[in-house]
Structures are given as C-alpha cells and as structure tokens.
Length: 234
Image (cartoon, one colour):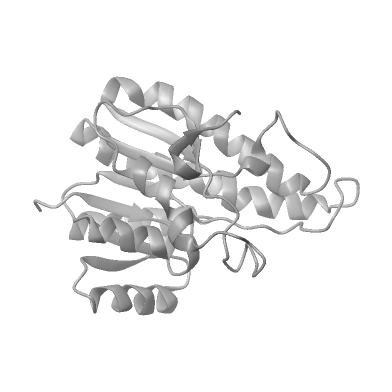
C-alpha cells in the first residue's frame, strides 16, 4: 500500500470521527476503530461514501483479546502503520468530589483512558518500529495537568496525568526507532463528552491531534500540545 496508514480508536463519533475524516482527506488510509462494531461500520460507510479510504475495525481497548484480534485483522488489510491515535476515552466522575468518587469509578476510568491506551500502543508499536518512523498520539486533556490541578474530576484528572506519563516513557523508548509519541489536548469541544456548552467544534478539536499524527522525522516527541499546536505545561 503506497498510502500512509493511520489507526484511530474511539472513532465512530466526536473528535475521533473528525480525526479520521481529516487524516483521510490528507491522503491517509484510515482504520476507524470502535468498540461498537455496528456504529463503526456506519461511521466508516459515511466517510467511504465521500470517496475517502476509511475501513471499520472493531476494537475494545479494555480487552486484551479484542486488541489482539484487531491487530490480526489490521495486518490482513494493511502492510504498514504510520500513525496511531489513542482517542478512546471516558469521563465518569463529572460533578463528584474526590472524597466521594467510588474507587470502582476510578478503576473503570483508568481501564479505558490509561490501560486501554497502553494496550493498544504496546500491540501496534511494533508496526511503527518496523517502519522506523511514524507517530503515536495520546489524546489527553489539560485536566491532567499537575501544575493547575483543582477540585473534582479525580478519576478523569488522574487518568490523563497517567496517560501523559505513558507518553513520556514511550517517547523515550521509541525515539531510537524514529517513532514520535506526543500528548494532545483538543480543547473543550462540543461532543457527547464535552456537552453542548463547549465553545469548540470537533473540527477544531481534531486540529492538534492531526498535526501530531502527521509529523515528519524532524517533529517533536515527548511533548504535550493544545489548540493552535501550542506546547502545554505538564
């Protein structure tokens, strides 16, 4: 396959769907990964109907077996991977104080936002290493910044802080292989998670993610970037 190839998780709606669209419009062949197989097929069909190279891929980031199966199906369809976007995420503790949030909620949040991203990165990184290049983008949030942490959202904040550490460690380990790993904050965006009051659009939120996913060999690694591709404090 001559086209560069990208894989985006949690991509059947919201920011993930928009990232898929923008990457496909830039000439990428994109595997649109989603936990809900039917929703993924429908989302991919909408983009394929516009002539974009998008294929659905069923992938539940909380399941080792699902990730392994997705990797096998991916390899059957594609002979390369140039960009991995860990977009799948949940927000389960809105409006709950850190003193009251159930530990089970924290665990469920980490299962998707942290362990899920790590599962997928560990499974698919060898494809990037084989190419001796490419990008991994972890979709994070300024809610995970230690420098400006405040009350509430303990599960979500902690998960994004942990995801940022995964970014830093993997960036250091993969740098010798030419693979760049960065975190992206899309901003407060009008999605199911962000809500109708959010000022940003999914198109705007996808901006820094797509930029990081398409970096060339001289691009940054181990960084945290937000809207306008501006560096952020950890």
